[in-house]
Image 1: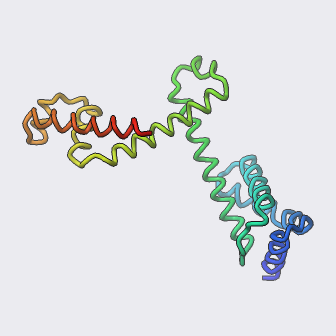
Image 2: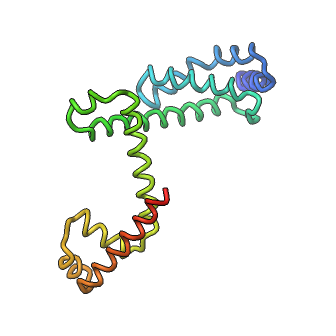
Image 3: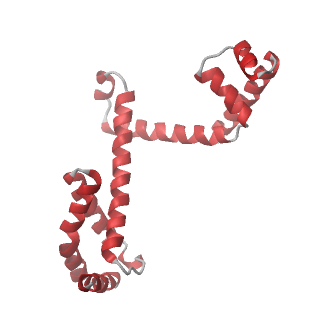
Amino acid sequence: MENQLTYHLLWERICMGDRDAFFDLYKALYYRLVNFGIRVCGNSDLSSQATDHVFTTIWEKRENLARVENVEAYLRTFLKRKLLRLLEREKKIHEALFKAGDEGEWMEMSYEEFIVKVQSDEIVRHKLKNALAKLTFRQKQLIHLKFFEAQSYEQIAEQTNQTIKTAYNTIYDALKVLRKELNNF
């Protein structure tokens, strides 16, 4: 309880721009937060990096910090969210490396090209998700059967109890919606 009050007072002083209070809070909580981060992600380097980022952000945004009653809990939550974002980013990079295929292809890519590729893939997925949300249930179903299960119009019509012409027209209309939505981005 006494530590909580001390951290709270340091927090208030940090909000007023007190550099000494910042360093005192840093010294008091740094290793506790790093250890907490290690339990969250299992990686000491990532935990240290994220903890440093948390404290850097606190100092940079000190003038706009919200009032906090339990500073340690607040910082743990902040750290946990930061670690989860970093882990998600690492996961996306690993997926992009896996999808890049041949080792030679991605080994020849510059770091900047690689990052652009990862971000482009994310943007395309986001655009496609939003475009698919504009389709009706039936349109989504038929698009899935046609393009993901590679069924013919005859197979689709038989499976969905429609005529071949209706299946064709439904898919055609869905593709028009998708094309329009994807071109709007």
